[in-house]
Image 1 (cartoon, chains in turn green, red):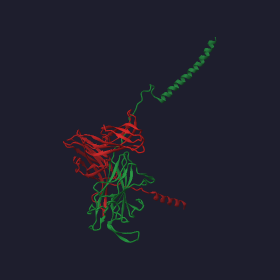
Image 2: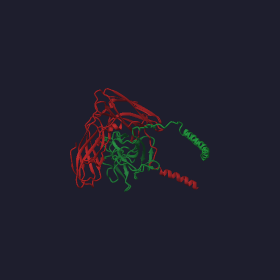
Image 3: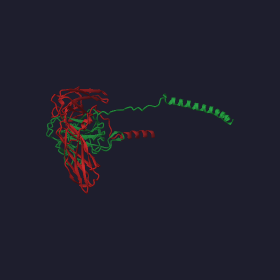
Image 4: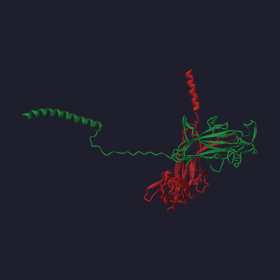
Length: 248
Length: 290
């Protein structure tokens, strides 16, 4: 009797449980169907290959030419200079052979032809990660013999030069090198700048070109300088400077 | 009034802070820094180089070949000579078009070239194709006393007649110097390109004991040589070494030029020498290279 009563109670509860259970199963099926339309067991994972390559493009160099008329006493080409925008040239104008000595204000003979104009060629170099070098060569000016050492190239680097306002390039990288100060006309291509080893970084380099006279103290401006003698035949003299950038 | 002052101040600040920046004259972009081709003697191969003008100004471009060679420093620095004037020139093997063109703003130009290798060619040959941005014909010349400025980008060309290339080198005269553990240990080694092709080489040294435990390691500089040329590897180690007998292992990869242009690897030269270090860390004895 007890069993029957109990069983009946159980049966009622059992029915109720069965209903609950069925609901849960149905719910589980619905959820599974939403998450995974397939009721098949999950298969092995798939991997997708991804590839990309960076091409070894040639290094490139952009340039800005600044004309400096005050001798660049602060060694900053960006002050008291004018950007040359009309042509890619370094026009030193009419050369002179006299100067005003600041010590006594007297006009004196420089004993050579020279130009007070200085040009800073600002080079923006990008090696795209590969090591690169920038070199300069010059054919000399017209009929002035190249045995006369008179055209100066002075490479320089400024950590304050900026790629954009407020973005200075920072210190010169270890392993990079500037070329020496000296004659721009030589038998081999003159080094302006060689980058650090790969991966190289983009850099702003300054190359000053000038036709200097003696220093105020009478010394020569750089080793080997002889200047343009005042005895040369008058006329206009033109030449070419070629700046080369190439991968190492 | 305050607003006007602020505005003027802003303008002044902008002018003052425009230090060291300027609108540069963008030049041109060339899609290949180096072209290395393996071509069977008697055969011809064609290719192309693409030049882009990323600026608003049109550019007059002159394309021409020259020779190049490594400077004695062997650090990759080069000099350039007129085409066909050096012993290892391949400038005469190369034809290309066009030689002169005007790149319009944001324009592109493809230069097509062919390389014909003579039947009897052996060993590596070299040239460079320069793309020079310069004055167009008819532009006004420089007046007074002055210099025109031309800027050029070069694509280095390396031609290897297939089946004739010997990539070989000798490692000579190892010098290991150290007075004490207070100084750097310096390892230097002579390198001689004994093959018939350019070599870009680099590597490292290891100092190990008899059990193969590494006690020191250093990298050498890369060297760049043409056939027959010599260079020097230099490496250093700054940390102390205890007294004892070691082996110096030199590993030099002479195929880095191939790896650069995805043309392969190696070969790699491995040499070793016995090394004895003294009580103060000084180098006492260096054996012969084997």
